[in-house]
Image (cartoon, rainbow, N blue to C red; front, side):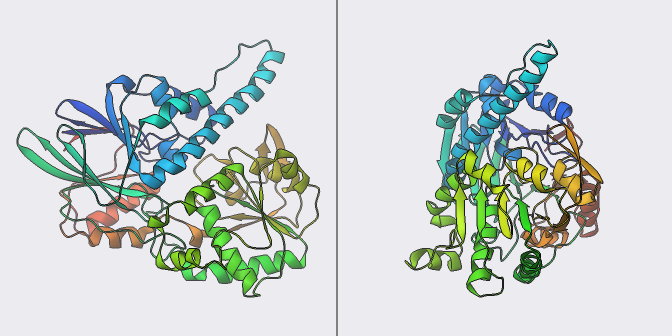
Length: 464
């Protein structure tokens, strides 16, 4: 039994890990690499394994850095099954369609510029037609029910508490009379987040693959979210500012809406219009309503009360049409605009930033992790100028970072989850963290008494 790490190794994006059992291969995740455009495109296009030799994919959750390269995998010859929870399969339908639309639109824009320079046209990484061939490959599974993946591999999904449908994947492996139990955390969530349930614990784990996104730091307490949000929004209202929130369409947008609903209803924030400017987020919210099996008790109670809606309120507007989105830039504040993408790399958020980033009264509220080399990371780091659509813009807007919203467990929460395992893993791999975070978390695990802790580099292979 062997595992090779082809993505999210000493970096955060592009999660894909190749597992070999009984001479057959499967993938844990198949995500898009995000960051420097040329490097990301090369990594996404040129897969380091033969897609037609992959028998199955086990998908931890629907975020694009975990699922977004599935249509390209199919385009290049994969014909196996994609196993995921029912909610993840439901979310991947609108998310992969949206990703294909972005691929096609971005290439169309690039090709216009290349044509003017008499350069050959490029092709999108994948198209909507590739997504249509990908969706029938999904084999939705329930939490807690064991299923056969291929000879020598049985799998069970447990709730990871990260986003709707996110899963800790537990694999029971067998080869040559040897048995081994492996757990892949995917992205591990936090306790007491709005809407979804807390991460589950698993038992009997001998090999652990754990994320480390925040492996060297602690978050603010989730209980602090309403207080911090109220202070920022009240101040923005006083100066009639636009509050621009780059947000992941899955999970984060719904959580922000949930908190804003309570702040306005309780009178802690003066009323102002809220626009969810993302067709994908609108579609995803519909999927949320279809999967109450993922909700915590508080959200279920709201869902069952005809007078309440956890995903909407009087001041909120869901924006679908492009013209309505453009019109927001001409309207005066105060207002809140929640728009994708969460790392400011594509989508309508770029237009809102281009139109408002030079205004000192604008508040850009960062509520999620920003990978290296993304526009969102440059905003967090306070670059004096940032490039949007190829043009430089001075950063004059206020930028506030609210880590308490993070759906990733921090260092202490990750350590607590690992410490809660009934048995210590005999072998541990630290992935899905930038190099500093991954190395730091690896040291924390060793200090906690774990042996054989590895922080793999891209392409490194290990015998289990």
